[in-house]
Amino acid sequence: MRLSFFGAAGEVTGSCTLVETGNVRFLVDCGMFQGGSEARTKNQRALDFGFDVRDIDFVLLTHAHIDHSGLLPRLAVLGFRGPIYATSATIDLLAVLLPDSAHIQEKESEWQLRHQHRRGQGERGVRPPLYTVAQAQKSLDLLQPTAYGETFNPAPTVKVCFHDAGHILGSAWLEVTVSGGAHPRRLVFSGDIGMRDRPVLNDPEKVVPSADVLLIESTYGNRLHRPLAETEDEIVAAFERTRACHGNLIIPSFAVGRTQEIIYILADLVRRGRLAPVKMYVDSPMANEATRITLAHPAILDGETRELIAWIEAHPDKMKIAFVADVEGSRALNDVRSGAVIVSASGMCEAGRIKYHLRENLPRSECSVLIAGFQAEGTLGRRLVNGARVVHIFGEPVPVRARIYTVGGLSAHADQAGLLDWLSDFHTPPRHAFVVHGEASASAAFAEAIRQRLGWQDVRLPRQGESVEL
Image (tube, rainbow, N blue to C red; front, side, top):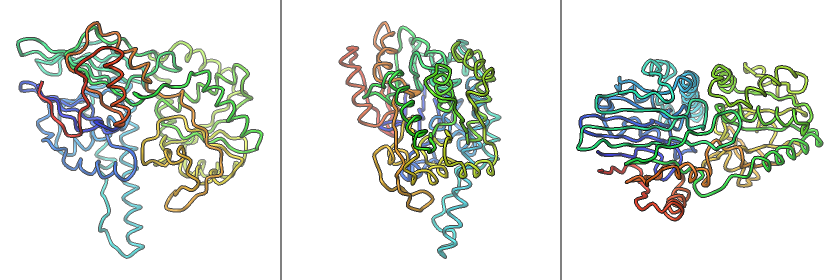
C-alpha cells in the first residue's frame, strides 16, 4: 500500500490523499488551496495533479468545504469519470459550493483581463479559471450518495463506512477496510472533526477501536478554544458596544456551518434575554442556500437546534432575519448606518460580498467586526486579526478604524483537547499515524501531544508531495 499526500501536509488547505493498493487507486478528498497569492499558485499546479486522473477508480469525500472538495471539477475536466462518494447532505451543499467556486474564478479572471487591458498589457499573465460554472455543474453528475453507518464496496477489495464527524452538515470521518493481502487493513481518515457539545450538529461519532493507518487533522492541534460561555460574553460585549456607538456589527462568516451557528448563537442569546432583539442581514446567496439545505436535513441536527428553530418561527419580532438575495439588496445595506448585524461570506474575507461591507464599515470607528473563524496565513481576515491599521480591498487602501473582535469558541474544528479525546477511544494505537491538515507548527505540536499524552510511537508529519510505502 502506498499513500501520497498532495495537499494539507504542513498546511491547512488543499486536502488530497492518493491511496494505491493492489490494482485499486482512490482519492480521499480533492480540495483547493486557500490563502492569498501562494494558494492561487498552488491551485494552478492542478492543471496537472501529478498523477493520471484517469487511473483513479473512485473518490471518497469527507465533506463539502472547498478546501476538501474544490478541485473535484478540475479532476473531471482532466478525464476522471469514476464515482465520488459523499453523504446526501454533502451532495446538496456541493450543488451550491462548486458552481459558486467556478463563478468566483471566472470573475477573478475577467477582472484580471480588464485590469491588464487598462494597463495596455493584453492577456499576458491572466490566469484562466481552473474550471467553469458549466464544468462544475457537469462534475456533480459523478456524485453518489451514501448514508452514515452503511458499509458499501466501491471496489471488490475495499469496504467503506461514513461516520458523522460533527464538523459541518454532512461531514464524515471514514472507515476504510482494504483486503486482498495476507490480512485486511483498516484505514481511518478523520476529515475534519467537530467540537463536542456545540450548537446545530450532533457530536462526532466515536472512532473505531483499532486501525492500521490513521490520518488525523490538526487545524487547532496547538491550542484550546475558549469555553462557549466566554465566547457568548465576547459576542454580547461586541454587540452592546456597537449598539451604544450607533454602528453596524459586521461578521465575516463561512457560508456553510458558521453562518448557521451564528444564527443559532444570536437567537439563543436573544431568547435568554442576554441580547436585545436583533435585526440580522445574511448577505450571501450561498449562505442562504446552505441554510435552506440545513433546514432540509432535520434528522442530522441536534435536538436543541430543532427547538430553537421553532422559537424563532414563533417570535419573528425578536429575531428578524433578512436573507439578502440580489445585488441591489446587498448594495442597499451600504445605506444602513447603524443597528444592523451583517453576516456575509467569505469567512476569510478573500472573496464575496463581505469585502464590500468591510470597505464601507472598516473606516467607521463606531462599527465593529467580529472574526469568528480560522483565518489562514495571507488572507485579509488574518491581516485584520493581526492588527493591520490599513488593508487593501479591490486594490485600494482602506483604513481600519472599526473595533476588531476575535472570538475563538465558535470553531467547527475540535481543539487539541477535543482531538485527543476523540483519539483516546482507540483501544490500541494505530500502527501508523499521520498528522495532516494543519499549519506546520500546529501539526508538529499536535504530533508531540499525541506521543506524550497517548503514548503512541509512530506519529509522522508527512510533507507535501511525499509518498509513503506501508
